[in-house]
Length: 217
Image (cartoon, rainbow, N blue to C red; front, side):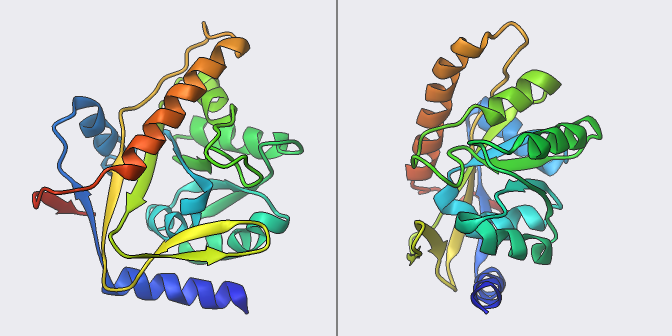
């Protein structure tokens, strides 16, 4: 029942709100928007607390997404196909090899994939290596993505909390410059890349859009 209520709430939000992608003067962000609009294969990653609305936005674009089948995102794993998402089940902390292999296969088939940078188990806002490994194995970019809105609410559960936009809002989709991980990166080098990804995600999450020059998604 909770899954149905959350799903219907997000549909109401989408129907009553304006979803926009702000104009950016940053060449990197512009390239990220092109990757999204042109449906090029890439690894889109976001903070787990932004997951609910990401299900709607990414589902409308037929992404593959990695979700855990137990506890923290079980409800979202059930909801995801309702939004049009294809789901690979697993976690970033163990037992997720099948899901990673599945996402690798989808990338090689020219599909776009998505997963939470910090995973469902946290720690919150601490990046895992999975998005970077996917980039390293395929050569496709990691694209940080977030959304922001002036009016939000917090959905608190036993396992954690999630941020949702309120109905009748203007919701901004924020992307940052693509990040590439090459075969030359050693596993121990990924810590530096993870810190860079963390800083970027925190930055776009806190960005306030002041320009009226926006494009509808």
